[in-house]
Image 1: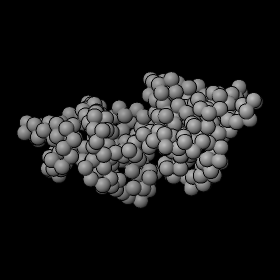
Image 2: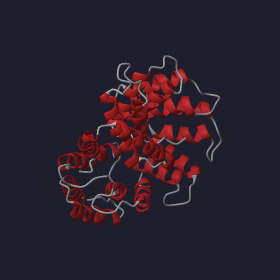
Image 3: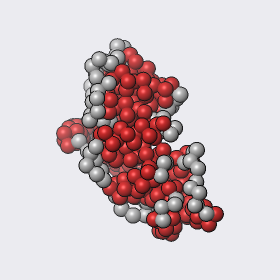
Image 4: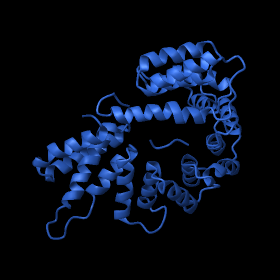
Length: 338
């Protein structure tokens, strides 16, 4: 079951530096929690990795990459292998290359790194660096989950829910994912919502889906806001409220969940006109333009882009031309194209 669904060093320098520090410190620490360094790892290796991590946190991609690669190729430092994969996955200082990233993830996975095992599962599921192999994907997800990467159970559950390459078992899919969701994992809560909403017909339960999406939305999950909005507009749950749906789509769009751009723009444009003037409220017209423009620039769905262009033309017919410069600036600012 698929979800309905990168930046330079400038005024965003502070934001990007924070992200790099987060990845290099918090994420990498979590990825290696409980992993004992290999017996042949030396103090110098550890010091070299600390230097590499400091360089990465400072945004010195070139020197950081060289340090990590030197530690990765000798096979003694799975942390370096995993981080090298992140360089290629995220395009840090070089063109992103998921195939090479998956090759390094697999090497780190073979060295028993739970986060790398999870990523390797995704690589096999999607057929990135090797032909798609759901059986291998399931094995890697299970290894990662058993090593403490609990969200991997939900990805394993997705294979069981769809019967993609392994025996279909929707009930087991739910039971595997549920513990992580109950512990408060937002990704797991999203999976539970999607299982109950889009999964096998034998387990579909819109009310359960709503509760799981609501739990994730309470933690500001953009995807959860989007799914709640879709459930309202499609009448999957009772109590449809057009204003509430608009707010949900706008919350998701503001958090840069791309599928929400078109929905937010469309729903603001279809707002009821003012009874006295027969015109859309000015604020709604402006928001419709902003989100529809964002959809045109970011959506990967050709039909959706065509529909967004058609709506934009209708907006331009009624919107004062003097608004354009300011609204286009807002779109660029949101998409960080300035």
